[in-house]
Length: 428
Image 1 (cartoon, rainbow, N blue to C red):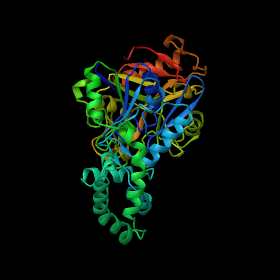
Image 2: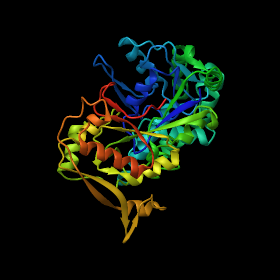
Image 3: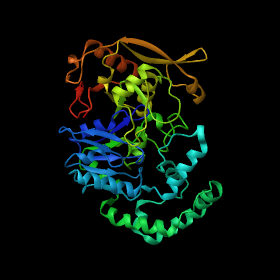
Image 4: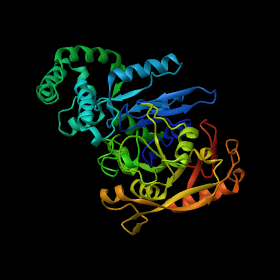
């Protein structure tokens, strides 16, 4: 059975966690392939229990599934242990978790530099969570990273940290006037984490490829979304890794030809957290309506999300970049009670209308949305389970999104619950 990748198509917060959880019942392995604890998924189980998942794969909530934190993830060990303890206290079995020996560790100097650099940038700041994600990826690429496997060798851990802190402490002290980090204190702290994490550490690349060879079902999930991809997003207002489908192969060690299906999660409107361009952003009562009715606050940080109408330019771009085979539209229920529902079908930049993503970031920053308008609906759609049960105007809205994005809409989310979905096509 080839693997399936689930990707966000906008700026994150599309509801990937719900979809991963929905598919998880038919999966043997659910894999997190990039990002860190700067991401968050909210899952509501059938009994009404609400889980906020940040670092571990959402599949950890499904009995019988092996959850995997793969090599492309950056791991804060203290946070991971805390999350595992919290899940265990809630009755979730975490014993099957596999943690890649090749995943990079978030260290105290990464968190310190992340926070101080953001403050230093002022109005030009990226809008990071301050959790050390970006600096960890930067050190990974600079070949200065410390990996999970280094926790198993105290000598290597100490040598690597001493080498890295020779530079990082100079920056913290002499550039930013901050306190130097003591290497021995960090070594002692992280060796304590090693004792807790050792049972989970594995060669996940081997584990996953053997699983596919044995016909097991493997689901790959990213942490953020297409427009936050470091290569394909609204750079520099992006994350430091590749949430797009190509990143799922690199971040897991599974070859691209072993991934058969790419499911794109797309919200029925658009949101964004942090700085950066957002052509359809609303600053009026409609923006407040989406914010409040959609509960648009970050799972990880609690930050208020910026809200706007659906952007089909982004949708088409995401379908193309990821090779999306199926779309899942989430939060359709939030749009009930609107007389008209706009869709952005193009960007106007200096008199030119673009139906596809402009080439330069300058044009994206200056883009003005070109809207078409659809008649709204007032019915509660949360009880709908078949497409023809949706109001006619809601059906036509979904069909138009499908046409504009260029991929079939296979599932429509009509509420936060695990079962609150309209299934149009089988995506397994």
